[in-house]
Every structure is written in C-alpha cells, then in structure tokens.
Amino acid sequence: MSENYDLAVIGSGPGGYVCAIRAAQLGLNVVCIDKRGAHGGTCLNVGCIPSKALLHASEVYHETKSSSSMGINVDNVSINLQEMMNYKEEGINGNVKGIDFLFKKNKVESIYGLAKILSSNQINIKLNDGSEKLIEAKNIVIATGSESASLNGIEVDEKKIVSSTGALSLEKIPEHLTIIGGGYIGLELGSVWSRLGSKVTVIEYLDRIAPGLDGELSSEFQKILKRQGIEFIVGAKVTGVEEKSDGLSVQIENVSSGEISTLDSSVVLVSTGRVPNTTGLFDDDLGIQLNEKGFIKTDKNYRTDVEGVWAIGDVIEGPMLAHKAEEEGVAVAELIKGKPGHVNYNIIPSVVYTNPEVASVGLTEEQLNESGTGYKVGKFPFLANGRAKVNKATDGFVKILSSDETDQILGVHIIGSQAGTMIAEVAVAMEFEATAEDLAHICHAHPTLSEAIKEAALASDNRALHM
Ligand code: FAD
Image (spheres, rainbow, N blue to C red):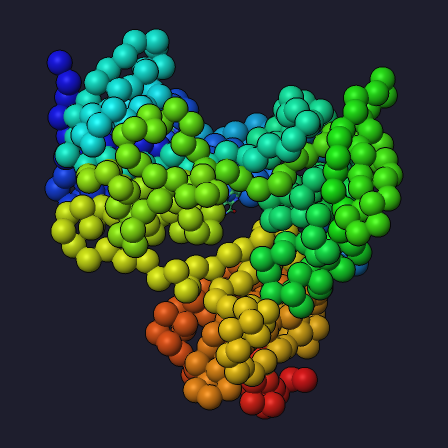
C-alpha cells in the first residue's frame, strides 16, 4: 500500500530541506527523500561545510606559524591531519543532527533511499536496506542537486585523481597538488592544501581564474594567490593524466600555440564545474524536459512540464550556490501553498572563502559594458583602512559600481579579509535600491573593515576621506 503526502521533496540539500521545513510550517504533510543516508546534501556533507572547516583549520595553522610579527612566538607548530579531518567530520555531523532536529520539530517525515518519479504523483523509493516503497504525493519537488563534472579520459579514483569530495579527505598532505580548473571550488581547496604545505598548481583553460568575477577582481585575486605561493598555468587544457611508478604525469596543451608540456604531480584534483543530477530520476516519456546543458527546465515559478512536479536548486539553471537553492526552496513551498514565492536573482551574493575572501553581488564591469549601461566606479583599498592595517590584512579593495544617471548601486565587488561578511551590507542596500550616496551617508563603526565600503561609496563622487 502506498503512503500519501501533500508534498514529497527529493533531495535534502539546502534547497530540499529548507523547502520541506517551509512547506511543513505552512501546514503541508511533507516527506523528504535522500539517497545519501544523511541530511544536508552536497553542501553539508561534501561541499560548503567541510571545505570551510578545512579552510578555517588551515588558516589557523598558517596564522599561528606566521604571527611572530605580532609578538606571538609559537614553537614546533605541527599538523595532525587525522585530527583535522576528525574536526571537519564533527562539524558535518553537528550540522546533520541540526537538520534531523528541525525535521522532527516541524514534523517532516524523512526517508533514506533512491527516488524515481513514476508519474506526476507517484515515487518509487529503493530504500537503503534494499527494499522498495511506493509513495504518493499531490506535489513533488525535485531538489537533487549536482555532482562534479568529469573530464574525458581522466578517471577519478578519489585517491590520486580526485574530485572535490576526495580533495576534502586526503589521507596525507600531497607534495604537489595539480588542480584542473580555476573556479572557486578549486581555488578554495588549493588554498587549504597550499597552507598545509603542498606545492599547488592550478591549470585553467581561460586566460584568467574565477572567470565569473569582475575582471579587475579576478586579476588582483590571481596576483595575491600567486604571492601566497600558488602557481597558475592559464590558457591551457589538460589532455591526460598518466600514472607513473612515482606519481602522476599531467599532460598540458597551450590553448593558443598547441604546445604540449607535462607536469609531475602527486595528486590531481579535477575541478571543472558541476553538472545537474538527474540520472535515473525519471523516464524520458514522463514529460519532464531538460535544457541543452542537462538542467531541468522550469517556468519562472519552478514548474516543470509535468503538472505538480517542481524543481529547484543546482538541478535547474542559475548560480550553483547553497543560498540560491535555499531561497528557491522557500519560494516553491510558498507557491505550492498558493502564496507569492519569489527570488530576486539580481541580488545573489557569491563568496570565495580564500584568504583574502572575494565577494560579489550584482553586475560586473564587463556585464555593464556589454549591456551599454553607463556607470561610475568608486574604489577604496584596504591599505588605507585603519583596521586592516593593524590586522595586517591590507590586501584588496572595495569596488562599487553605480549608475551614472541615478547613482543606484548596480554591483559591488570586494576582495579582502572578511569580504564574505561585508557583502551582506551591500546586498541589503541593493535590495532597497540604495544609491552610492545612501551608503556614503550611513555611519559605519570605527575601526572596522566595513568603513572601506563607505569610503568606496564616497569615492564614487571623488570624496573619499582617507585616500
Ligand atoms: P545538493 O546539496 O546537491 O543536494 C541534493 C541531494 O539530493 C543530495 O543529498 C543527493 O544525495 C540527493 N539525491 C540526488 N538524486 C537523488 C535521488 N534520485 N533520490 C534521492 N536523493 C537524491 N555553495 C555555497 O553557496 N557556498 C559555498 O561555500 C559552497 N562551497 C562548496 C564547496 C564544494 C567543495 C562544493 C562541491 C560545493 C560548494 N557549494 C557552495 C555549492 C553547494 O554545495 C550547492 O550549490 C548546493 O549544495 C546545492 O543545493 P541543492 O539542494 O540544490 O542540492
């Protein structure tokens, strides 16, 4: 006999679990299904949380070693990698338990198993104990997320040739880590292992790293990481990785000249993006359509082509970010309940959690130029910020792009210590359609790094005070 629900959510990542909780808050009878055997999806288990744990631990290690200029001398600083990994696992488990608690509190039923959608209201679940179960639901939300993209001819074994998942659990610190792909995931993981002592080389097909960033930020970012010891080979593609008796040999082709070279490496991280996860989720004749990149097609209200089946998060188009998935989770739950769910895609901040951090919201200079929008630039370097100076964190700057007609803020790009926290202020301002002048008028506490935001806003009108 099948069980009946108002809503079945497939996937308990940030999109799915948030959707399930919001729908339950709205009075729906909800079940959330995940094949992983732990809630939280990619983000919590093999993504955002474990990577931030290792970024934090490696940063503490690095800072401890290099704080003698502040009068702190610590002898014999060493790494116990197993303990560091245990610390990371504790962080994951604590957060997974948090979702278990929230599901109980909100009476969301949880099923661990592999879901396949049979019709607009029926799901077959292969339970993790091997048995099968059929459930029925008036609505189905697909939140099955994404997985690492593979690279032709390069087989990931999660030991020597790893995806981000393997790179979060290496058993020893690699002598030389080569990273294929200069996106944010590769750069964050490269920073971790570089701080722990690996030589790190990043190979990027395009002529710059983190290609989605504002160009000026991206080149400053590359310079800073290079100063920290990370090496970059840009405009190059990896054509193969060969296993040798003493490690790996990476074959590299220069994209413009075709010149071939090789690089010896102990571990290779394949970090060339992520692809939506729809394998085996439904048969083609069900009617759910994918676009040319494999993402599930929806209308602007997350409806797929099958009535009653919705999709959110990494499995649909848009930035592959946890907070984007969460916002969509809330919006779709409200839409299912007949409320006006909505996500403002113009204001989705993105953060790279390296040191310094890199944070952006809104449009880049390249996008403004492409659309022919007139804009002003207000920039302020952390070198001129008092707090950054005493913190010895003077790398980077704040850059505010605002309309040259109305002064409305169109995009803000920050590279600097705590940029990820600071970007929230401008996201709020932009949500309220603030102008650069509005930001310049706001009293910012002294001494804080955030004063650089006020100064950059003043600089839009050539009125920066500390520069
Ligand atoms: P997911 O989190 O991918 O969850 C989908 C879930 O669905 C999975 O648990 C999966 O097991 C389950 N599932 C799939 N198919 C089925 C099926 N047929 N039946 C049952 N269950 C199924 N984003 C940020 O915003 N900030 C960061 O700092 C950040 N860092 C990252 C670091 C790394 C190393 C990686 C890999 C990603 C990172 N991301 C980050 C991206 C973020 O993890 C994703 O954008 C986010 O997890 C997407 O959420 P989601 O709910 O769409 O899907």
